[in-house]
Image (cartoon, rainbow over all chains, first blue to last red; front, side, top):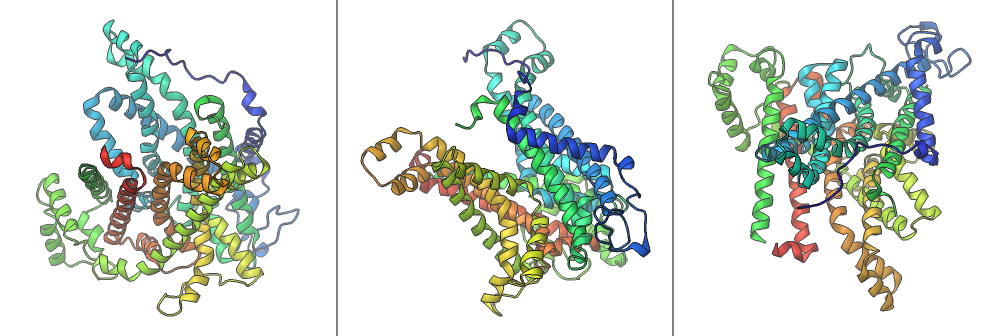
Length: 285
Length: 314
């Protein structure tokens, strides 16, 4: 028997994490990108799909902050709307993968007979590189934004479930779970009130990394033409167009990639900061 | 030891079985009839009937799965509906560039990752450590395809040091092969180098706190020997696990890198097959990569035997 204090719901004692320079940088950058993505219609002069055949491949200027592409579409406008897609897909993927992952881990970790089967299944999904699994799913279900979110959630579900399960396995052995059981608490109540809180910290940390990698993977899928449909502006698809025009119009490649990188960098920095703040055991020496 | 090996083999087989189930259901998720997905639109009724027989489509789903699994296990991956040749042959034709790219990228990732990780751990909490960690953070955050495009702009378009894109087979000119692969290998290897560097640093920091390190130092061993022989060797187990995962991740990442650098490899074949709705090739490639993945993990697990005597007796 292991005697340990009952885990509490995770709480950031204050917003002190924000004072670490990397986290402050990440939060500021992510805040700015979220603002641009939300306020895109107010910030851009022309719509992301507005064509201006006479103004094709124009370099950055006061009129077109980031220049125009080969159809005369405003790159800044497309970047703003593309960031919208990146953030939406990243956020929803992280949310779905961590919610479903936690649920799977709770049930599998609590009912031991299920554990082996579920974990084997998840191992099998993890044995496929994320890009390839996502491409295969997208090839089967067709190009829609909701399908991208579905495919990415399936790719990241096993990772979240593994992290949550590790926490469940530790807590399951604790005396207070046994005590709750002895007092006649129902399984559901034990899972939700006594075990669930212990999984939240690791899952939250994992979710930030899922967010970051899902943004990258969505861009990769769009870059390969296996992601969102062509009429939805996507940073990855812009890079695929920019690749063919690298010599004449480098701005089509540089700006979307920079915004994409900054988004992922910001989320990763926040993730590292959260991990240090919430999980003292992992704190760097 | 035999038990350990048998257990690992068993878990590899179990994983492959699950991969089979996943792929089987993805193919079944394609809207419309399975035969039209696998044969293409212009298949003759005889072909359709032959495939229905082969896949036992008139039997219940478990029997269908068994029949499908049976053909996969015997190496029959079906025929490409676009190229009209066996899937394995189509993949084999394109495997050289992919193999070379994965190999070079792995070398880049392992050397860079181990090197940076050890340096950061030895210089813990100094400017060097922070700089390495920042580089690793960049590696995790920059999309490989954007990094690749920037490298092409700088080294091929602007400086004209390296060819922008393409591939030369090894048999034609090994030197040219290398020149064409430098940028793709760095682009693909950099993000995994970051993953390996972070793990190396963390594992080294743990190990360097151990008593035997202090003993080695107080014996008067030179610092380099303490770090590499006593430190790194003992820190290696978790690092090897990550290296195994990294190599497998890169085997999937070639899909993107080959597109950026226009390399006619198996990764490009997957993308072309997606565009042509050539499902047998997609299915075959996914299973092939999963097999490589499982094999690499098996090799990593077996390498523990040599690295840590305790595993041999457990």
